[in-house]
Amino acid sequence: MLGVRTRPDAEAAGVSISPLAPNDGSAVEEVFAGLSADSRFARYHTGTPTLPSGVKALLRRIDGDGVVAQVARGPTDAAIGLVWLIRTGDSEAELAIEVVDAWQGRGIGSRLLSAAELTAAKIGIDCLRAEVLGTNRAAVRLLRKSAPHARVESEGPELVFEWEPGVLAAARRAA
Image (cartoon, rainbow, N blue to C red):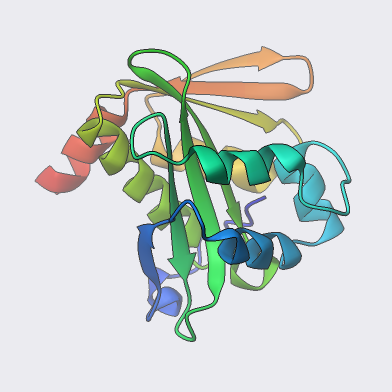
């Protein structure tokens, strides 16, 4: 899913993050194609060789409130990462994030997470939840670093992070 090796964010120069449009299946396909088998397993918790139908269905549900997604694009405009917010309650949402292998470790995951938190705060989400495999060290590091105030629980092989996005968003604005 993520390969945060904490290299300087300067390597991500020329990267833009913008809302993913409901009809932008090509960006979703590009990111999925850029994931290795290990990254696909870490992200989807299965070794799926094809894009899960549920992800394709999420594209049709993007509405700016119940389902929100943002895409990171590299200097050549290729899609290099995605973050999804899927509302699970009035003020709660599930967060999912993925970065293509070639761009892992360059701060893209951190930037996507920050953008998702700002969006969550704007649409009234006050609790984010992310489920990651405990063996996905990069994702665990990213979440521990970006959301140090998160509550973390173990559910079988997964770690479940829950946190208030406004806390981090406010801290970044004050910095």
